[in-house]
Length: 258
View (tube, one colour):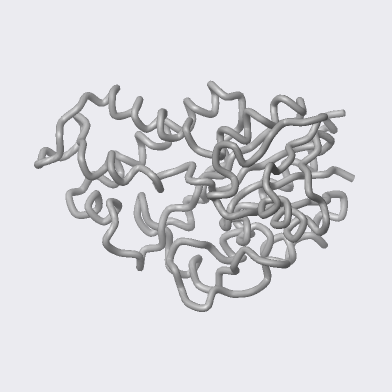
């Protein structure tokens, strides 16, 4: 039996919903989810103590207990770890995308900067996310492999964002290329493996097909309650299956880490 730990904000609901459907396919895999809203997981929310990641506050502790099935702390005894969402991705880069353009971008009223500077800015923003902070904490308590799943691209029905601006001017693919390069460099520098959003889920370089945003679940209790309305940001079980099935199959075949 291989034990996997998944840590994230509300975006882990897609993976939990998928795992409810997939677990019979992988009887040798056990997954524990630790979920909480992003403000609770930001810098200072967790502390390394006695070989575990422990919540500092009661609210985060309670969220972990509810989503994990009773566990308040994240131990270093799992065979693999995955962080999910936590603003690691295009989300959080709106100011950069709206105010600046790189040499490779369409010329408009955005402030021009070099391609190298634009890439560096992306890396700085990614390195500042709770996702990377948690990776660094995990590496203090375990030698097991750590993976990072970026926050999914917003749904194609979501409007009024920097992504729409990039679509309009034709910079969406160029920015996506830079983002992927920045994520890969951050992954290499921080010694984790990037788990990419499946290409089949994208309608455009920076947009997710609406079929994957319908029927998403909220982060509460067993993570099995649907959103009262479509938010075009969170993904459903179908999306989660496309992410989880090949990844778990790879882990299932890998040699144990201990």
